[in-house]
Structures are given as C-alpha cells and as structure tokens.
Image (tube, rainbow, N blue to C red; front, side):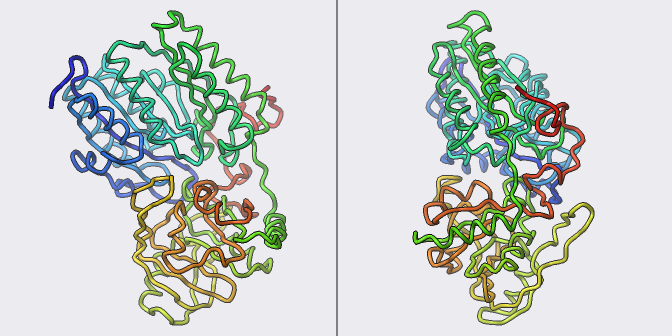
Amino acid sequence: MNKKKGLGKWVIARFQHETNTFSPIATPLAAFNPLWGQDAYRDQENAQTAMGAFIQIAKQEHVDIVTPVCAFSNPSGSVCAKAYERICNSIVEAVAQGCDAILLDLHGAMVSEHEVDGEGALLKTIRSIAPNIPIAVALDLHANVTPMMIQNSDVMVSFKTYPHIDMYDTGIHAGELLRDMLKEKIRPTMAFRQIPLLSHTLRSNTNEGAMKLAVEAATELEKKPGILGVSILAGFSLADFKDAGMSVIVIADELSSPSNDLAEHCADQLENLILSQADGFIYESSPINTALQKASELAQSPQKGPVLLLDHSDNVMSGGPCDTTDILEAALQFGLSNIACGPFADPATVQKLIQLGVGEKATIELGNKSGWKYRGITKAPLQLTGVVKAISDGQILVTGPIFQGSLLSMGPSILFETANAQIVISSNRVEPYDVAVMTDLGIDLESKSYVLLKSRMYCRPVFFPLSKGFVECDSDQGGPTSSNYDWFDIKHIRRPIYPLDSGINPQ
C-alpha cells in the first residue's frame, strides 16, 4: 500500500462488554466469539460499527492496517480473567510491534475478575509501551468513564443515541479527529466531569426527557468554534464499582483555543445542566399489576397492532439471562391472552421439543435455570402445556438499524403454543432487535393482542412501528436487570451519589 507521510500504520481493534456484576451469566472467552487478525478485518471492514468506521478512514488514508482482534459479547457477569488477558494481550502485542496510531472500539463499562476498570487498565498498559502514539477511543453511551481512561487516551467520543443507531457515526467522529491530529491540523485536549448521579437505563433514551435535553445541548456545543466533540455518558449502574455513573467529556482544540478554559467551561455548563435535571434521570418502576392494567386498557384502543410488554427486569443487553418468567406468569395470572412472547433462552427445553417434533403436545418446564436468585431464593421453572408449532435454526440476518447486516444467532429455536400464548424458546439468549426473532417462526405480530419482549430499548426501532402502544414491566420479585436499585446489594460505587443517598441533592 502507498503510505502518506506521518500516517504509517494504524492498530484498530474492538473489545466490547457491558458488565452487569449482578448477572449470573459467566463471560468466558467463547462469549466474545473473538476474531483475530485478518478474520477480524474481514468481519468489520463493512460493518456499521465504530471499528468498521475506523477501517474505512484508514483505507482512505492508505495506511497499513493491523486488526489484532474483534471481540464483542452481550452483557453478562464479570469478564473471566483469562478472556480479558487474552484479548488485551493481542492488542498490546500489536502495539508493541510499532504503529503510528491506535483506534479502539470499546464499550466503557467493562469489569473483569482482576481489573475492575477494564478499559482503563487496557489503555494504561498501551500508553506505557507507546507513550507518544495517539489513541482514539469510541465508547458506548452507557460507558462508566474513569479518570484512568481519560488520562491514557487523546480522543474519546461516545454514541449520542439510545437505542444505539450511531455506532458507525461515532467511529467516524473519533477516527477523523485522530487523523486530523496526526496531520497536525488539531491538538485535542479533553475536559472530564464525573457526575454524582446514578442514572437508570430507562432514562437514557435520547428521544425523550432529560437525556434528550442533555444530548441536544452537547450537539449544540459541538458547533462552537474550537470544540471538537462533546459526549454525554449515561453510565451503567449495574456495574458495581467505584466509577459507575454519569459523566461528560468535552474535547477542545488547543490550536484554536490555546488555554484549556474552553473545554472546562463547556464541561461545567453540561454538568450543571444535568444536575438541574437530576430527577429526570431516575426511573420509578410501577407494580406489575399496575403495568398490566395499563396494557389491558391500551389493548382496547381501535388502533391496529399489539400492545408491547417490555420486560426490563430481564433485559438481555443489560446482562439478563433471558430466562426469568415473572412477567409472563403475571400476565397469564392477570388474564391476558393472545400473547406472543420471548425469546426465552432455554436450550434444554428446545432440545426436548425438537426430539418430539412439530405438532406434538408437551408439558414443559420453562426458564428460571440460569442461576439468578431473588434475594437468595431460586424460582422453579414455569410449567406450561402446549403444542410444538415450528422449529428453526435461529439464524437471522438483521435488517433493522441496530447491528444492520449482522447475523443474530438464536441457535435452534422453537415456537411453543399454549392456550393463551405463542412462546419463542431459543438456545441462545438474544436481544429482540429484529422482528424476525418471532416472524421467522410463523408469528403474525399484527394479529396479537400483546407482544412480551425481553428488552427495554433495542426492540423499539423495529417493534414500535407495528404496535399501538407499550408498557414497561418490572418484576415485583426483582430481576437481574431490574430498574429498582433496592434489589441490588450495591457495595462499591462511589458515595454519596443520587438517588442511592436520598439525603443528597445533586443540585
């Protein structure tokens, strides 16, 4: 390849995990489905991810591209030490061989068994062996940004959307800043604020409320001369370590504004705005019967389509095991019918029903097998009688805006029909960010009264257009991703922090 002077070789990698330290799901190396070297490059070259964007910029600049790894895991428990070390070592070794730039597609809320600040420790190691090489990082909006992460990077930019539909755009933003830094067009400096606010994920929807206001303010500040990037980080509260919580990053150009005052001033402005809206980042769960009553009333609307029941007590993309049955049980006990629901991850039940075959009647014991305990109590599986209606290999090419073009693998899957519900049972735990998790098994969504999804946000771009409304459902018995902090024995997050400390007024 031809090289442009000063740009040389770029190391580009992806290592993403949002760690729910309360999740019963282990996170070994296999959970990341890691791709190494050229396999990582081929997988990400045209991907709508930050890593995909990094590669496109590198190709435009005709640099040598090294892609040591692409590793992504759905949220789950703390990352196993061996997995963390193996993936980090691949990146560190690539950097140690010499490069001119480092571009990393990280999440920002990773906790491993031996490193509670997963990304910070990785960046510190990289910086120690390449102290003068610029480092650009793309982050998830739910990153728990730490001082170590800031100190050991030059450019750090996060998503501005939740649901996340700007992964690629964020990579372009971060990558172009690093490219311009290499060309000496800019000299980035970052201002960082940790905010004493433990926001709820359901209040980080960028289409409404306080989060929308904060992101709009950030976007407006980016138009200011000398400001290169502004990120509002909602944080991820179920990663129980010191630095969990909201934060702000502002990047300014020292060439345009020789002092650091511009970035610091903007960071102060955003921090004050967020603190003034503190209660808008806090979510109060309704009792499940109150939520179901609302759903029943919505179902009477003449508008076509089902009512969505969003089970945010077991949300896959927050570390849920995808096998708790509380919301389904409550819906059935409440008297709801004509329900489509799932996917429930229960590989043992899938295998049993595959052996029986389509058309066969069976009594199954569904879910509650992952090891999640409700304050020390393990629930028994839900017993249901019904018929095997369909069998699928569970391989779905995603057409929606989130992970568009990627493969969603439910594994061997079943459609099981009872008197009141059609239930998708999968081998793998998956987030329903494509309607095909149900339609591929033969469910006619528009004919349903209710669709129960183990999702709080990722389902919205594809399921909302088909529905007449939605209700957010939290288990009264707690859940691994519940929005009720009372269910979690939080020990390590910095204090005081709102709303854990009720006497604290963040304003």
